[in-house]
Image 1 (tube, rainbow, N blue to C red):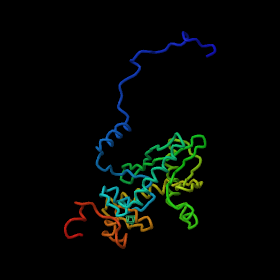
Image 2: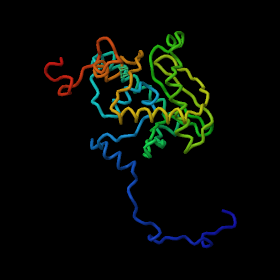
Image 3: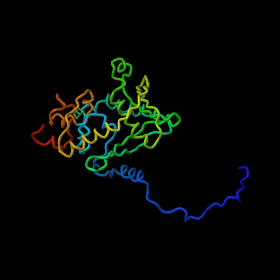
Image 4: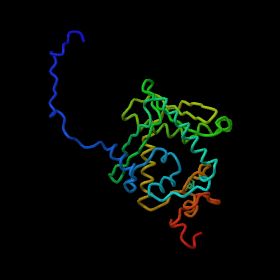
Length: 258
Ligand code: SF4
């Protein structure tokens, strides 16, 4: 470099400038997960994807109720769906910034702090753009029938805006829908959902505290829900024949129940 010769710079090579430190928490939790040594359900930790969906489902998940087996999970079609989703998910490699996790604190009335956890699919740092990928089927048909863009997907990416803009600059939000033959993108308006998020979490926390099961938000997504039997039995939720089966030894499969 001009005007600078190596002898002008005093380079500190003393090892004492580095001190022993804690192993980063992310590495510890990765090792715990790899060894299936996952801590018991940590309360007051909510994924954005759960918050924007059915509150009853989120309540069950938060309380650590065991998920049921979907009858469709063992069909070839369903297995292909999962494999296809994995293949399409490789689209996220289009950006170097991908699968970024962050926790957003929500102060509760009790004085405790809940956290909302978000995971970004992709982030374009040049445009400061959050990109959420949805792998699906029959995009053209869904668009024609008004199922795309889905309101929950819109809410989800708007929540990512709140959660991630505390650590990275965000200027635009994009949802990308992809199936095996089509790909389509939507730009989503930014919205301040801070209060909405806080209220949602507080309501869920209140339900947990009072042992009050929230009313089921029945929709076409119930057929993918792994709490259908529980929801059906609790009332004010899923009606019809559940398409999921409680796992052996669960409280619903004890003699007399089935
Ligand atoms: S079955 Fe439907 S209403 Fe019941 S918990 Fe699941 S998503 Fe909610």
